[in-house]
Image 1 (cartoon, helix red, strand yellow):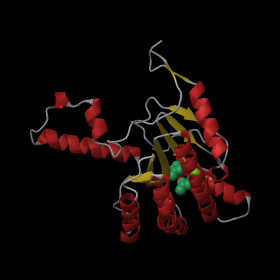
Image 2 (tube, protein in one colour):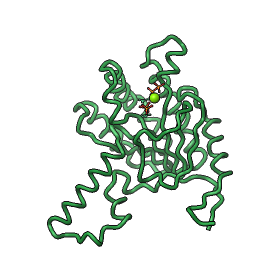
Image 3 (cartoon, protein in one colour):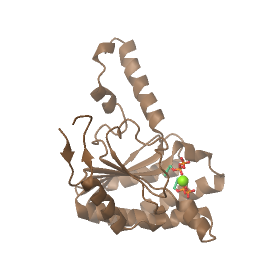
Image 4 (tube, protein in one colour):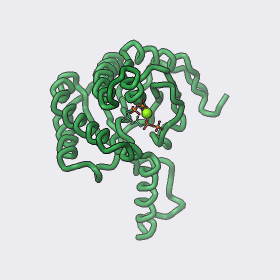
Length: 236
Ligand code: IPE
Ligand code: IPE
Ligand code: MG
């Protein structure tokens, strides 16, 4: 049975192009990241207004630790200041924030801020905002396999009882429906280790726009493109 779509329940965005945006203006890369926060604000508002229920933003990949120390440091500072500055507005908009990814490498201060935003927005009922930080889909799947293997090793589970649903439940995204639409800005057409399992039947959209230039209208246009697609799930 094929399905015509209306509104995606879950939109996931690979926010790419901050560095190029800055370079085009003769600025430092971190200035592109600062400007990218404006786009985050716009897109959160647009998602809440349009009735999208889950919005996942890829903000920092595990591979991004390999960037120059100054850039990583600037991003950590930005994550902390965003928690301080944005939390009141998120609460008033009814946004509930969840962080996915590994928390092991973040400093105590960053982890405290991330816990704070999750705790303070826990009552939000309009939009679930999922921030992927130190996220690697392959690490996530590897961790799930390890956890399941542990259950098999201690006799709690039989190999033949391992199901797709069980694997989904072992991922960071256990409580979150799979993304319907994945957007990557800046014209790059790759997943860069993002939601490999979860996006198996997502629709993809790759606008040329650099993330700091991405507007509410661009988000709405992505929803229109999605609505025009036919999802077939392998069936005619
Ligand atoms: C995305 O923008 C933000 C992060 C990865 C943190 P980039 O920093 O990758 O920007 P480009 O791709 O170099 O332009
Ligand atoms: C992916 O973008 C990660 C985020 C947007 C957070 P990158 O810019 O790091 O990915 P590559 O290096 O182009 O694949
Ligand atoms: Mg990039």
